[in-house]
Image 1 (cartoon, helix red, strand yellow):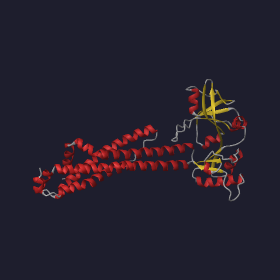
Image 2: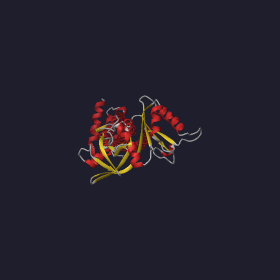
Image 3: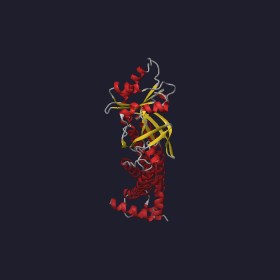
Image 4: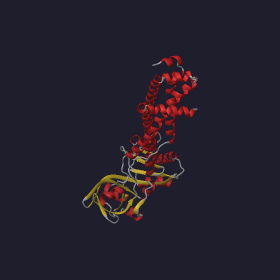
Length: 402
């Protein structure tokens, strides 16, 4: 019985195919928009998480200045030195490695080619803290770090812009007045979700940077990698206690440094992404409501057009429930057609959007199922009143209808 009812419903829909398509357009747009928004939103969240993970596992960043100023903003506070870095690594058991870093924007010159890039003064611990493998050549030797030799390791962007497809190893490029020999090239990191090129840098030994570029022994940032299985919150508390002691900060006085957990970036950005995705999905879901109203409208028109048909069915013995089921199934089938088309369109738009934004394509089967189920619910809710109206017609009045 039910299959016969579905067959009649499909026939009625395809009898006025164009009108039926225009009717379900609101449902199609609503379902497609919700699925596309959620898919792109989840892809963005995965991309942010991946970018933060690429910065290093369980990574903390210690910088001079108050916390309100964020990492890297010294705000008049005294800078760190290498002894602070060594103290964090040696005296805190939860720390896997601590690495110093000093950065400056400089122009790298090779023959007629030049590139403005970030020059980072550091040591081999930086590569371990940031989980950055060397793709070509080697990292710094300890002897080069101790003596401050003029050697450098390149990011892939610097290599590509200055050397093209050539082999940079053993060649020299100029940074300000320094001519440094290239000893290695880092593995490609790609562009982060913040739009930052993570391969646009040159690493030089910290002592070479301090002596020949900065002219002082300051350390601007300390990258701290926490051991696996250890809470970063606990490590942050230990680092804060140690740095307050080393910087002679008394009880009740504010810290003149900041310990920043890189996972906080992922948490904040993920929260923002989820809120925006939710808001946009809610706006898109309004189209489902509009689609439901359209379905109710067309079903009321259909009941009016088929009044005599309804009267004949009732006159030959059809029960009210059977007539109501026929029109209710018709509304549900109409809505499900819209839901099915919307799912295909939504996944297509999600794939295109993910590709344009360069984020992973991450469709959520649960959202697809919910959207499809919600479209069926739309058919039930908005199809009930027209179906009820059809079922309660007086057969005699319906047969008299012209």
